[in-house]
Amino acid sequence: MSDTITLTIPRQKNIALIAHDGKKAELIKWCQDNAETLKKHFLCGTGTTARMITDATDLPVRGYNSGPLGGDQQIGAKIVEGKIDLVVFFSDPLTAAPHDPDVKALMRIAQVYDIPFANNKATADFLLHSSYMDEEYDHEIINFKQNIAQRAETLPNK
Image 1 (cartoon, rainbow, N blue to C red):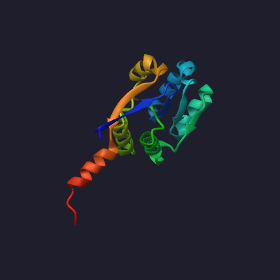
Image 2: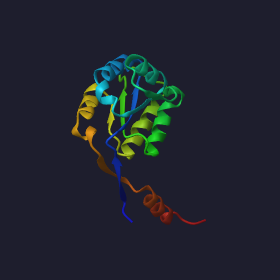
Image 3: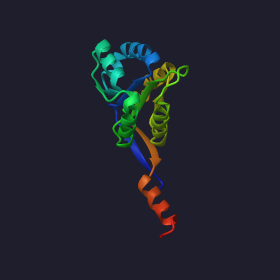
Image 4: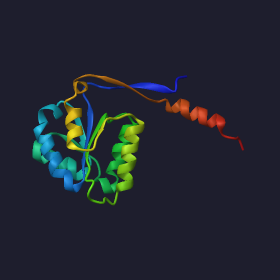
């Protein structure tokens, strides 16, 4: 059994849109500027951000809880389930966030599952305007079942 498995990010992406309070206006402007591309994909986001984007752009954005109330963790769970293909998270590096551990956990799970993660406008622009946005993309991740089986074999039985 292989140590990795190949997953396919489909042509129509599931994109999570998230922003810290100090970056919400910037993300909304980015969504307005890129609405023609974004409307081709499925969008979701954390609570207030999702509502604000929908109000400002008419893009349908499925809302989860706000970040401090578990929204970041909900997005992370959707990544694990294979239901989010790309994350755009305009984070504010100059403001402390009470839910910083949740943000770090989200970034980590996106990395584990090899999900593109833009944490600023420049990276989001590069991702959205990549040729991969219009096609399927195969990527390899850890074969978790194999990994668990191997780890279980190395643990002592008690």
